[in-house]
Image (tube, rainbow, N blue to C red; front, side):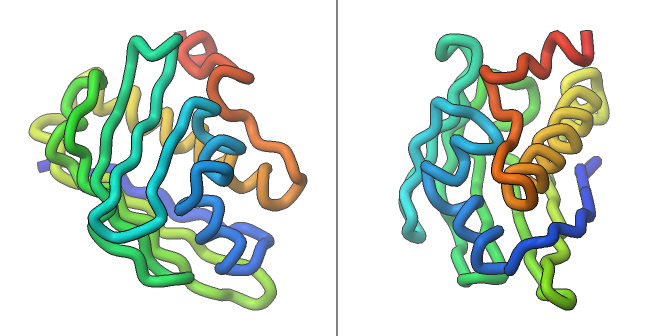
Length: 149
């Protein structure tokens, strides 16, 4: 099974990165403005795009502040997302954080997989910009689909 993996250095403390990944307010500043996320294991998250035409729902599987976050994708409009797991692993490095991201469990490396790989690269840079400069580029502020064609 193909996996998506990204590695990114962020000039922010691990606790700040963790909060951007585990709170509705944090998610709204880098991924999508239409987000609701419980901050506890067993809780739920819902992330919507394109006037709610695309909704991804997750269950929070693991939270280990400020080092690890794991979501199980319960349902998604995006092809191949349902049943995948999304993890964010954080490691302090100097005054910053190294983020290791993975989305695992795709059935095949098809067009949706390729779009997802590109999308995560884009939104993880948005996370970095939010934490380092105070402003990310979440949906719908920036239309990622228009960027990739």
